[in-house]
Amino acid sequence: MVDKSYNPFEVAQAQFDRIAAILGLDDGTKDLLRCNLREYHVSIPVKMDDGKSRVFRGFRVQHNDARGPAKGGIRFHPMETIDTVRALAMWMTWKTAVVDIPLGGGKGGVICDPHHLSMREQEQICRGWVRQLSNAMGPSQDVPAPDVMTTGQHMLWMLDEFETLRGERQPGFITGKPVGMGGSLGRKEATGYGLVYTLREALQQLGVSIAETTASVQGFGNVAQHAIELYQQLGGKVTCVSCWHQADQAAYSFVKRDGVGLDELRGIADRFGGIDKDKALALGYELLPGAAWLEQDVDLLIPAALENQITGTNAARISDRVKVIVEGANGPTTPEADEVIAQRGIYLVPDLLANAGGVTCSYFEQVQSNMNFFWDRDEVLTRLDAKMTAAFGAVSACARERNLSLRDGAYVIAVGRVAQACKDRGWV
Image 1 (cartoon, one colour):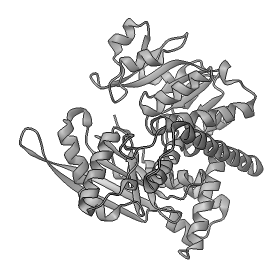
Image 2 (tube, helix red, strand yellow; image 1 turned 90 degrees about the horizontal axis):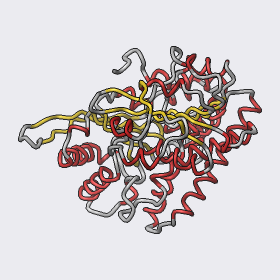
Image 3 (spheres, helix red, strand yellow; image 1 turned 90 degrees about the vertical axis):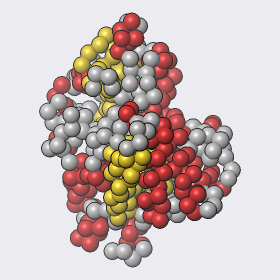
Image 4 (tube, helix red, strand yellow; image 1 turned 135 degrees about the horizontal axis):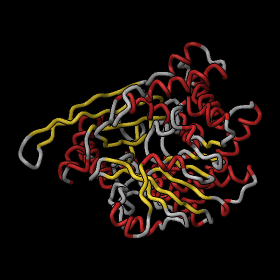
C-alpha cells in the first residue's frame, strides 16, 4: 500500500530548506534550487499483445544542470508519482555534487508494472518514452540510466530508439547498457559495492571490525545483492533479507541466524529480486513479516528497497544493538526517524553518499562511451573506491567541523557546490 500522506518531494524540499539556512543562501538561490528547472509529462500509446491500445503516463524531471548534464535513472513502477520523480531528481543533483562528478540531477519514470507486461510491450514503452523526450535529452543535456524494475535491456532499446531518431551513434546518451554494447564493467556491482566502501570507512572511524558485524538488509535487488556480496567477502554476516513477494502481494523477511547464503537466495529469486518463500523454507530459512527486518538484533541495518521505510512510527523498534544504518535506497528514512536515530546515537550513512556508487560508475560509463575506450573491471572498481572514500572523508570532516550529522554534512557540501556553480554561471 502507498502512504498517501507521505510526499517525497516535500521531504526533499524540507531537507534543502534546512541546509539553505545553515549555508545562509540568498532568497534567489533558494527559490532556484528548491524547485526543478524543467519537467516533462508524457503519454505513451502502446499496442498491447492482445491487440488493444493502452496509454502509459511517463515523466522526466531535470532538477539542475549547472554542474553538467542532468543525470538520473528511469524507473518502471505501478505506483510511480510525479512527486517521487521530482524528489529523486533533486536528490540526484546533490548526489552527483557530493561525489564531485561534473553532472546535474534528473529522474524519469513510467507508471507501469513490468511483472504484467511482455518483453515486447516493455520495449514499446521504452521506445515511446524516448520518442516523446528525445529533444530534451542527450549526452550533453540529460543522461538516463536504469532504476527500479528497469535493466540494461531497457536502456539498449532506449539507446537504439534515440540513435535512430538522431541518425548517428551516441552511446553516451544512456548508461547501464549491457557490457559489449557500450556498458561498463563493474556497473552492476557499483551501487552495492560503493555502499560497502562507505560502510567500511564508517566502521573504521568507529573502531569496529567489519568481520565482527552482522547485518539485516531490506531489499534483494541489484543494490542489495551486491552490497551483501562485498560485505560477506569482507567477513560480515547477513542474517536477514526482506523483499517483496509478487504472488502474495506482500513483503517477507527471510532469516537465517548463522548467515544467509547469497548464492542460494539468488538461485530462488526472480529477476526483480523476489525470493520464492516455499523454496526458502525448504532451505531452512525462517519466514517473518516484511517489516521484521528492522527489528533484528544485528549491528547494521541496510535499507536498500524504497523510500519512506524507516519512519517516526517504527524507528523505536530498531534494536539497541544497532550501531550503523547505511542507506542503499533513496530516501528510506524520514526526518522524524532521523531525530529518533540521532537521539539513540546510531551512526547513519545517508543515501546521498552511501548509494552514490551507482551514479559515479554511470559517469565512468558515460566517459568511456564518449571516448569509445573501455577500462577493465579492476580499474573501474579501483576508481570507484577512490571516489567513494574521498567523498566519505570530505563529508565526515565537514560534519565534525560544523558539528552536524553525516546527512547534513553531505548536504552542506553538495548544496554548496551546486549553489556556487549557479552563482558562477550568473544564474543568481
